[in-house]
Amino acid sequence: MAQSTPTLSVERSLMQSGYRFVAGADEVGRGALAGPVSVGMVVIDASSQKPLAGVKDSKLLSAADRERLVPLIKQWSVGHAVGHASADEIDALGLMAALRLAGTRAWQQLLDVGIRAEVVLLDGNHNWLSEQEQRSIFDQELGLESSVDVPVQTMVKADLQCLSVAAASVLAKVERDAILISLDQQHPQFGWKVNKGYATSGHREAIDRHGPSPWHRTSWRLGSSGGVTKPVSKA
Image (tube, rainbow, N blue to C red; front, side):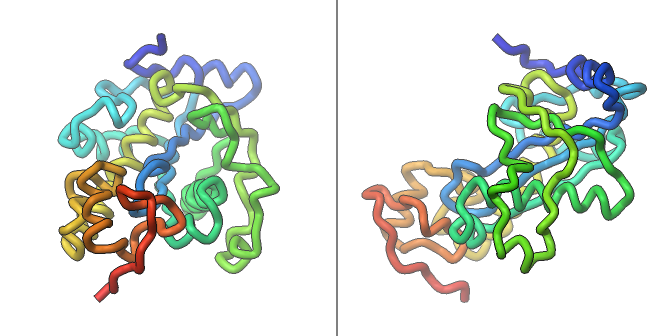
């Protein structure tokens, strides 16, 4: 079983292949019914980075602990970013392409401040971050036609084992939760302050009663019966 306290062992092992600056990347929101998918990236210097105590996969931390860790992670890392792709973009592009779009946005944020990792360590077993077949005209319209152009190494349960990836998951989780909490003020009937857009029975029942909002992924099976009804107004 993978350890629950992540280390920098994997990041340091990448130095054997010549990679010093490593970006840990993780996504949150993949299985939600509403809100964006979000991709966090945290860049570390594998040659000199010291461990940061208390950081774990975001799912293993309380909300208070995640909030406490955010400024520590930002100060500790060489660079950090979170990119988002909206529910509309998920509906238009599909989930995998939307994940790549969110990841590309995070990558571009790092480039904009002069930080370029040499390799990306990505949680999971599928490289959705740099696959060329996921390009689209939509990317070009957004000026994001260039995807991540460094090696991407996938690793199952990297968020449990790799400190940079765990840190990225914390930043992405806190930013995405803040978005859903803010949207809850406009549509409290869906309980986003509590469920953060995920598929709880109460969330599905609220969609049955009120119809989906403009922040729901309307290409998905939303209500308790799996049906999709007319979205409610943003007003």
